Length: 88
Image (tube, rainbow, N blue to C red; front, top):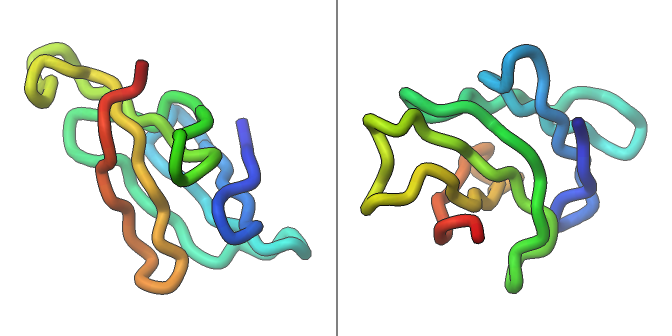
């Protein structure tokens, strides 16, 4: 599964959801991010502020503030992710 992220790069969920590849417009992999502990990349969804974002789903035993599914924003420059708010 893949989606065009903020800034025009492509995010691609690979394998069992444990990794997110960030790809440039030419198809070259720029970098790969790992899902947080006890979680997987689940899907992409439109965030009200940041557009398409990966949604990370945590195991029920590791839910954050009672929520298992969270929007994450990918920061291309720092090659990192930031947790935003719950999905749905």
